[in-house]
Image (cartoon, rainbow, N blue to C red; front, side, top):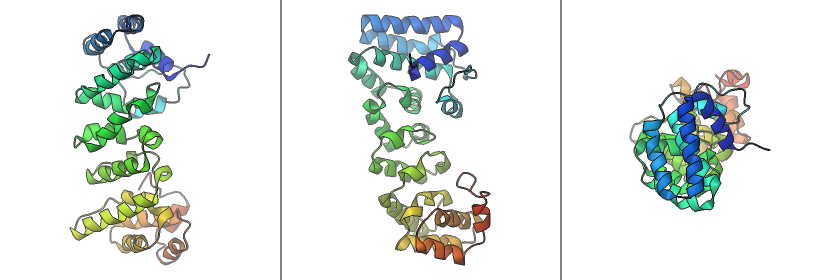
Length: 281
């Protein structure tokens, strides 16, 4: 029998919780599934804080769990994963819990919302909660925004290009770490390249800097003003901007990009050797 993500979460919780905590968790999930009670769900969810000690998850056992690295990079805790486990379990138990879980998320406090957004991908049908992920793009609370935008595979799997573009621009506007956004190359598109150019010109007009990482998605869309923009980066006195321009052109197939590299090749050899990449820029 093939294990689900929820089965793996159960295994991980068993390794990291006290036996009394794990038994309580399993018993409330069983009770909710049996009673099909919205009230029981809400009660169990609210009791998590009192019943589960919030500690870092450190033991993943010998399981070849595809999300192990993600849990580690998000510094998952026992309380967070216990909450996700309850939601995932009741959703697996029947469609009748979809609306109660959606409503639970709508009234969640900031910490609960961050947990929910970070681990959306563990739920049986993540697309059913896209409304919460898209709403998080509108917030000015960095921790909530970063819960959906940083390291998270959800946006590249379920967002439209327009929604993904909005997230990328918002991350730049909020001056968040763009290296933590996943699948940038996969999600790159012509509209985003235009948006990046427009935004950069606004920043330059106001004598403000632009994060060199911001230019990563434009490689395959170098034309018009973007050629001029990248040449401006090559001519910059800021070495990191020169390196970004080199990376943009190196990963481009356009003739114009190759011409720029012929002219501005200070960092080209290190890019070719893999010493300079978007990951270490």
